[in-house]
Image (cartoon, rainbow, N blue to C red):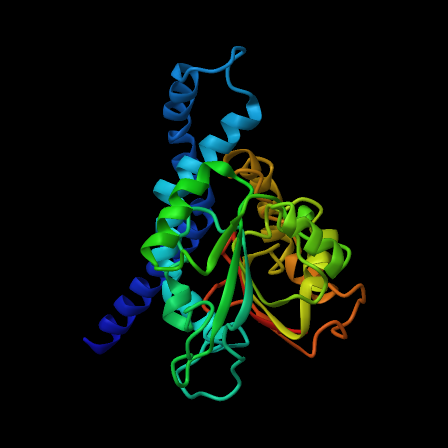
Length: 324
């Protein structure tokens, strides 16, 4: 009887692992099919909407399509699956790709000061900021034992996300602390503090070098243009001792066949996911952000793939905090 039970357990384990492997390999195709389901409704809305003539442009269609898919399906699902991981990240409770228990050694400093949130989207992470830090804005005393966030700049060039983002900021009680920046990363950096002050007086936000305490990037560096140059520009915005909180998907490094499979999926993926690139070596770009090939750009480079992601994950991630 015992040998029979042992064989049954092994068979069940093999079947469960086989299902997990096929699910991991098929997951990007399912994700793209869900995205595709939003296109007819978006096209109908844009075509029927009054315009100045000529119909909607391809760029407007792509922006509205991805905006609807992200707000209604992708964003809420990603938020539900990763909320605890992101809370741990912004609290600094991560090390070697793992979320740590409260009080565990090896963690990083929590979010504080002037914060730059990249790819703010529809605001799915906005309510996490007051959970992990005191976001009281100007004046007043910080709560004892909690880090203080003074200002958050939410960078989001896709205008289709802005109404939902503004609503999320209001719900989180951050209207006095959170500024939506409707431009791409490439338009953020001013050459000097004096130039930034002139821009501010003209009603345009640009940030001088070494003016940001923390950068938060949650699944957004996959779609920024010219990633090496823009990551270096963002690095320059960080003060010495500043921190970059990272949760991003990256290029597969498991084996030749998974790398080949990811490249094949990426032929189609950007067209369904608003220009997102699956095969981007973001961890490599971040490591060399200061224009050097080693880790000299960072006093601490704590970035790794979560150990629970096994080889069949077509969309692997890295998680961690980089300290300048």
